Length: 302
Length: 236
Image 1 (cartoon, rainbow over the protein chains, first blue to last red):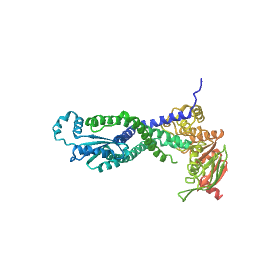
Image 2 (cartoon, each protein chain N blue to C red):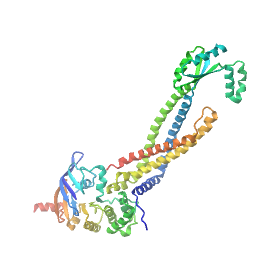
Image 3 (cartoon, rainbow over the protein chains, first blue to last red):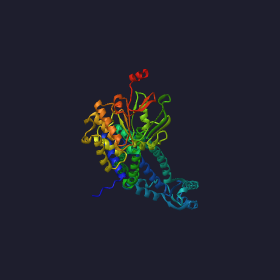
Image 4 (cartoon, each protein chain N blue to C red):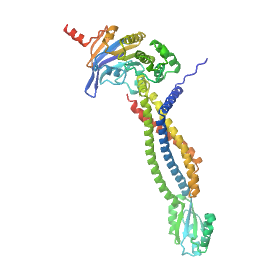
């Protein structure tokens, strides 16, 4: 009979996994509590990350809009208003200029409103809108200079572009980012602490075994590995739970809140999960390793 | 080989546990280290096992210099030493077999070798028929035999037994010493730390007596005096 080849790596790995999992089983309740709390932490972190990501995409989308709406002063007659086209065309960075009379602007507006448009129909005679121009820029990055030049043309009442909205969103994103980083630091710390305590329990239960292992010459790496497996497994379990939890929450928010109200759109979960899952698992592994290694270092000092 | 050259160990800057000890134990020797509590015996064992470093002097064991050894090399030093303690230090939820096999596993021995070596060692210490018992199902003497089997299983060059008979009755103590002699006969250096005078004198081996951190006598023949005898000898 052929003898099975001995492979130290797989043999040790199987041992570490077996011992690591037995630690989790031994302190089932503590492990469950750890996974639950870390799941909650990861859920909060990932929700903020996804909000920031969506705002980012929105900002990118808005910032890439190269159109500026220029509203003509009400005191200008139609002829005077149309005469402005020449002035706009001469401004640097202007690609094209389209005049939209206020009647057409009103029609466009009614079209946007859709089935409730009849309510506004009475206003047609006393149209509150202004004649406007749609200016397309050659280079979006020169947006601010272009708006300045447009505003200098006499007869321009105001301008509006998506870029201005995007600037406001950037400010909002910065706040979301600041909150996210703070949460990552705080909740990450909490998670590491919880893993560290769970592993501490497992190590305490096996302190005799550890001291014997040290006595007979087991390396620190060999002693440490099952506990790292335990910490990483707890982290991964929490990462997996948080991922599916996030899936449910995100889908709910996308379908019920955002699309129902029609305020703005969010990226579908199917488009973000490939990014979210590895990210969550990596964070979970880091939390697991940090939590266990921190505890083990104290125990191994002999 | 174990060699100590003018070894001092001072704790917390003032407590002097060892005070210029020098001794040499050759490969294959059987020696007792005797002395009253607080004489420095435990410090000596801790130095040899790499748990402490000397404050001064040189501690050499199996080719390792304890004063200079790197932390990462300490496990490899310990693989050359088997330590037996008074309180056995067995793992309660592991069987006799597992208690011994586990230390081979801990140093990365292949399963094939473990399956061969553990039964051999258990037979050597006379526990062939109790491999499946848990520590709480065997006697004190048997527990100490398991501890010896465990110390022996990784084939160390030196066995250090720290008060191995401290928890055993006289009959079991004699049995245990015979076992250590048997192991010594197979070529392993044996160093027994004890203060059981009768046992030491019975075996007639080399006896190194320590007091106040220094060697006060080192002679072969197993002559270990108690306080009363010492006074008588001085008077004579």
